Image 1 (tube, helix red, strand yellow):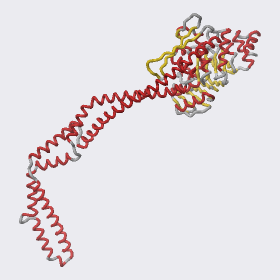
Image 2 (tube, one colour; image 1 turned 180 degrees about the horizontal axis):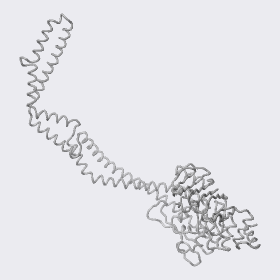
Image 3 (cartoon, rainbow, N blue to C red; image 1 turned 120 degrees about the vertical axis):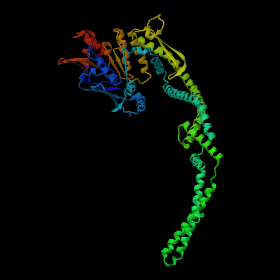
Image 4 (cartoon, rainbow, N blue to C red; image 1 turned 120 degrees about the horizontal axis):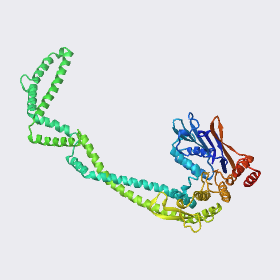
Length: 554
């Protein structure tokens, strides 16, 4: 329930706090005093857009706060709604809206910043505003279906269906995306298969390009390389004045004197090591020279291989064999994914068909449940319409099966209405007057209140077009609603005003050439006077006061 509404700097309100009763709260006041202003302020904490031009003081921000006590049968559903938005649930919760002078808006739930969308979603679970302008809601197919679902008492089944339907739509979209990707992949498949086969046939090896380029350089320069190696060998070993014989002679000279000084011996040992190393170099030079041979056919083969490698690198815009091998592996993965993707697509199709059958089964259960509730709903609404002065009115709820599943099952609900005898029921929006629509909506809300924990219900002058005995009956029905919920009723009819647990009076002050709106709770004596004025105008006579007391049961 809404315990308190605090309004600061909005329209004609400078600072106002309204504490409400848990039962039926009546709000009355003169035309233009500002009753609708409070509803406008309340709509801000229900996620509606705001404009700074409605500020009382253009130099201060506007702050609207609603203090709620969340308990009873509705608390568990509200707790779930809070958790879905990652908000901490508190039995006493505060919804706050701040609009700064530059038009920027901030929304808070229990001091946690939230988006307007989140505030609207939670606000709609806390307060339901029903005005004479909102009666056309009864013509909305979604609302009509919601009415039948409320009376069917199958919320658990409906929640389970909606959860699985959401999953069903998600995997349908997943399948659609996968099929699209598979089609795109197949369009590339032949070309990618060709590229892969081309690379696989070449059988590239990681280090071969460098090795073959080195071998080609050697073969192309075989003659000069061979000549240089021969000359080097001869300078080391074969010629009369070559290095090795001279080095041997030097070793012999030092050997003859090494006994005289250890330093000579050490020096000669170094020469012997050098001799061994130079012999190895000479032998390896000779061996390398023998391996060198001009081989035109080998040159041709290497050139052909390198041409293939260079061509592939240019084709794929890379500079190394490692990159070509990486491309080959990626192509292989793409082709494998196409095969596995086809398998996944088939698996998803099976899952979707299985889930569809389950949803159809649940939709059939929902349809059966709705069908059972419809007859009772028609009877209960007709009974309340009788109570509010429409003895010949009746509704007919038509149920039709849709071709496709939707988030609510497979039903289409159409509410038909007839206000008079002999008049065939027709779509409610086409045949009901404003007053009839108001009473019809009141009847519907009344029976819904018996089946579910509706939020705080606010009626904004839905009594337009009625009076006298009808007004008394409407007041009685509204009064019965407080057994199931908190009700706030803004009215101009004394018969309805007399039914409340608490009565608040909205007034306008003129101070300093400026109008302001205020509200106060009436005591017993003030309430009698206020209702008497509603009956007969200012300065009511004794008879009007007596009538007011009678309406109040005093």
